[in-house]
Image (cartoon, rainbow, N blue to C red; front, side, top):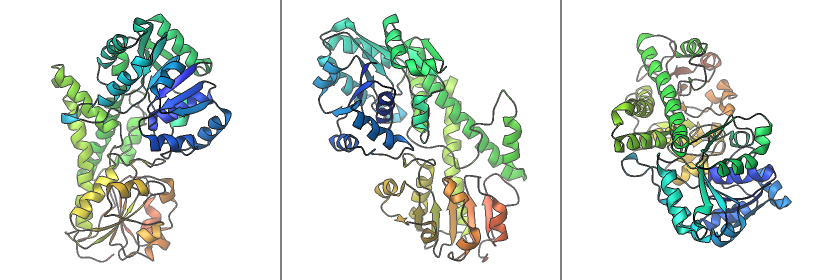
Length: 448
């Protein structure tokens, strides 16, 4: 087993650290955020991810996972150093690489012996080769310090599974030694049949952004079809099923709704466009502008429907929102479509009460004007409208008849297209499901 360090203990870094320790490696992790580091060192994950915290505590207790604030400790300890810092959206959509360069600059002066740096962050093509030259110039060990790129493909809500048993491992390398070292790190996954694809640095960098661009395009495509369905009275759900049976297309990510959000797809789509523009090939990925427009337009559509449902103006109307995380099984509200809708509702004067199984503390930090309710029924009390905006399984188990007893008006918009509308209608609710016929909102001024 290898001595591994993790630079950055955010969502990616901490998950990677815990899972590598679970695989038997000796792991030392560092972060500039001392409060977050102390929390992780105490066994408490600073974010919600199913299954992560028990593994964190298990490997802390086993001594396979430790934390430090010293880059000198990191440099002296590690055979393999994983760069896992954020690359947030910067000016004009470009990826902000300041954190990754700062991490590399802090680490390099402490690399006095042969080692490997493996980048996992999502970066514009060309970054890895620049980092390799920069680190070798700064490190006492010089060219004995190699650099590879090993992009991550974690799905929030399934990150532990994706780390321990990924569907593929991508390596961008310059040397055979880098490949050998990383094969040792991932020996358990490889023994379990996980494919490893080895390529050059630039191709490995492109794999991640290309994958996210494709997924974003697929999601926006089905949402565009949902808009068409609403116009012509067709049903987007059987349409998606029919498309999904085509082996060339597949059913995954053909789920219509409010669109994508989170800390990856939106920023990666915009960063890819910015990179293409800098390379002079922006016309080749011009469709990504349409993908982005369709995605954000779904939020506009829900606000438009909400306005219509309450009589033409949201001012003074009570709206209950079910779900504020950008997706279920996560407390992540970065670029959350639901939270964006909440902001627009409150900007128009609505009184918004929200419920989410785990993401309300994060939402309250972003939008303190929201009322966070501990239960769905408290969120919906005296509501003129209920919006289903994050597809938590909890909400599919709601008793519509019981909820009808607390609202002012029995009107619900299912923006995630996953509630069974029949029992809601049977309980007297007016239901609208994006992209589906037969689910009409009441005329403004009526009292369902």
